[in-house]
Image 1 (cartoon, one colour):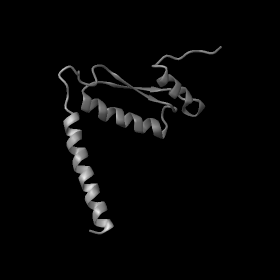
Image 2 (cartoon, rainbow, N blue to C red):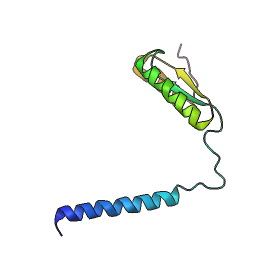
Image 3 (cartoon, one colour):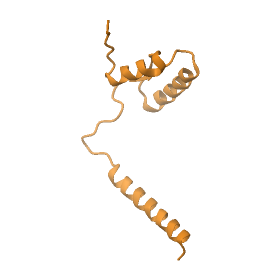
Image 4 (cartoon, rainbow, N blue to C red):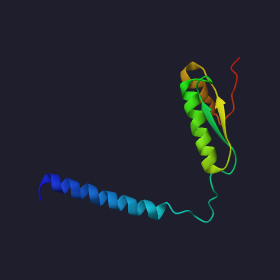
Length: 98
């Protein structure tokens, strides 16, 4: 067996094992509740009307249709995305420093 054949066989075995284990552990537990259970807020850290905002709104529309729950867009522009990141990290609460 050459090194290449060994490598191909090894990768195939890993893929089979990972898919089998993934299916085993991915089954839902009876106690888990479905996601989402309420409206989802999608934070876009850039100005409304920009390219990223348009992509986010298209994504929100598709997710809303798939999940059957509203997806709310929140634009938090400024500081190169840092304000939006801080907003998400703080759980949706913005603190003032002044």
